[in-house]
Length: 180
Picture 1 (cartoon, rainbow, N blue to C red):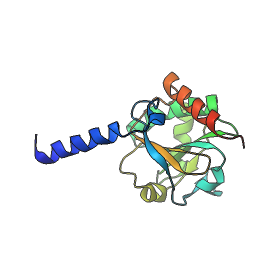
Picture 2: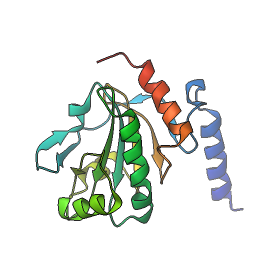
Picture 3: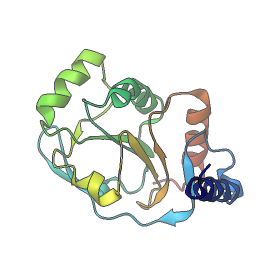
Picture 4: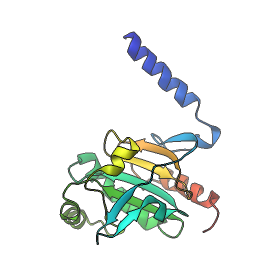
């Protein structure tokens, strides 16, 4: 093992051991921050072309998933996000699946129909500005955002968002938030 690789492994172990107690019940691969982090202002559109901002979702716990139809792991993950939205979506929780497909709705709409996505709203960022502003290096990347619009943590790569472990964790998180 090279010195550089050993240093990276040691840094990763230090980060894992530094995770605060509140994060110990977090599902596998979801890395929670020690404290909520501010996020840059993000702008995107819905399927009707209406301009939106991440701040429009304040008051809710948000699972912000950046994805694309050409990303194979994203395609496999999308039904689990749809089922999560069906289970938890409402005034205190939302899955915000933000497509960075350059084709916008022309790429996303057929995919949603083909896979049977019925509970997610189509959010589009064909220029990929959100991914750039968030420092996303690969897809899918998902951010967990508190009702004040701050990042609580992120998960890089696909996940089973509708698993019992994940939904229980998210239910506990939503329950700890003050009502809107």
